[in-house]
Length: 248
Ligand SMILES: NC(=O)c1ccc[n+]([C@@H]2O[C@H](COP(=O)([O-])OP(=O)(O)OC[C@H]3O[C@@H](n4cnc5c(N)ncnc54)[C@H](OP(=O)(O)O)[C@@H]3O)[C@@H](O)[C@H]2O)c1
Image (tube, rainbow, N blue to C red):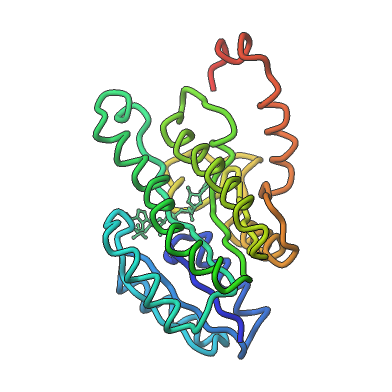
């Protein structure tokens, strides 16, 4: 039985990824879903069961309630009886201008996008280190690759996350636990509903297939869709003296 824990399970990308997993492991997959909206969780769980999941349980959690993390992780591990894969998907694209004006918005952005993930990964990494198998997959962003004036607080949270995941991957290598950093580009989801869409935009379903394949292949890092690897290689290599003059 494949055992999958998803945190931030109401996210559009997470929902699409859960469907891919259930499709590929039909009648042989148990899921534990975590998100803050219990009603949404209930309907997502019912849908995944109809699609062929063997068992779907869930727990409501606001990820900024750090003191509840240990108990929720314990509940998931007990209910599933181990963990093959953990996907962490929650996030918020906070208002950059508000973050610049008042630190309380920047703090909120860093708590949700960085600190909550570090807090969740502390008991999760220890659990997986003990069981000596499994994959920790975390949705970061291309925004973490280089700070830009339009979203550098969110970008700093994701950049910090990337460094944390690198270290965790290095630590867990000898325990045979894989750590996957997922870096999507622009994805058409509720998070980006207010933004104008263009040629570089992808659907959550496309990104979901990429996440599934990267987990199956045991990759360390994946850009989704693939062309973001090329774009970010160029962006990262622009000299700082030039980059600071650009409007990005
Ligand atoms: N969309 C993009 O262009 C894009 C690009 C790069 C990376 N990403 C990353 O991809 C991941 C998924 O985002 P998405 O595009 O699928 O957007 P989404 O559908 O808006 O999902 C964001 C999810 O985060 C959850 N969330 C936010 N704050 C939370 C909290 N305090 N406690 C619990 N859950 C919380 C939301 O829960 P509710 O449903 O309850 O609000 C929602 O399920 C995020 O990590 C995001 O940073 C997205």
